[in-house]
Image 1 (cartoon, one colour):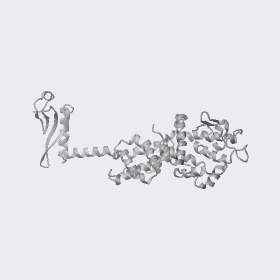
Image 2 (cartoon, rainbow, N blue to C red):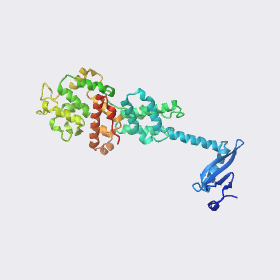
Image 3 (cartoon, one colour):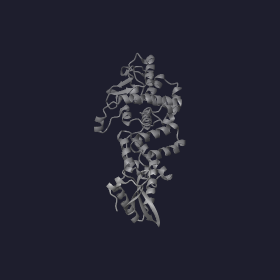
Image 4 (cartoon, rainbow, N blue to C red):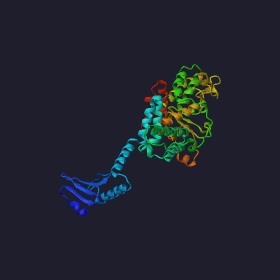
Length: 401
């Protein structure tokens, strides 16, 4: 006789109460009510557990039994299948994209400087882990990675988009090698087929790895004081060389730590507000004794009514040993690379660089100066530079929000 909901509610005697086709409810002496199914497979009697009544209703228990019998008709042991599914669920839970990525980072860490490890980790945390990190690594589709990378590109960080894509591909290649997944679904993600080509003339730029040595050389440089301090401000503000060379005292509000460059001096003919770090304020303040009575902050030492010449910065870099390998304009690329890889918002970085959004909709949406965030960014950048010089940059990385 089949079970009914009314009978289930009144059961009180311990024992097994059958519903048919192997399904039964077992009532224990302690009062527990457990759904079971008895079946034979491969000549052996076996049992399946379907949960506890009333959390699992009679109708649900019958559905589970029907599914188990379908599996048996297909020649599969439902108990073995359940064990396999549990093992897969446990494997997926332990091998999320973030977990596998961090295992890859740990494996690679001995090959990288600590600051490089941090920057790569930060880029993955910012652009990949937030959206996809909790997913089983095997479940993430190529289209999802492509969409994540395209979002980075659309935010104005094309170089970073390419680097993040290559890092994700490396993670999946490592996962296959270490038998975490059977195949690499990201193998066909080719940067040139995903990211737009950039029509950019690249100027030689210093790498982050070269920064400590350069800062030490700049500290000991015996050239013109105006040039040395102008180079420091150039690095600290990520502005264009011409904007620093033509800087006027009237543009600075040192009490507010703000440099306002008028539209006529900007490449895009739009006023640009530059937050000044404590270090940048100190540089400008140090010029008071040298040029405080003049129009220009960094006048030519030979012709005080004129600014430093166009070739001044690159000539100084050449004398420091960087001819052909770095330019003054390249400090902007260094700033962008490091800030992006350390997880700062690409929109904030692009606004600091005074880049104008090509997409009119985004341009209208992003008219915000991001001034408050840029104040934090530029102080962080100045501290980062000091840290690289002192060898303590790991304590000066972007603070967690």
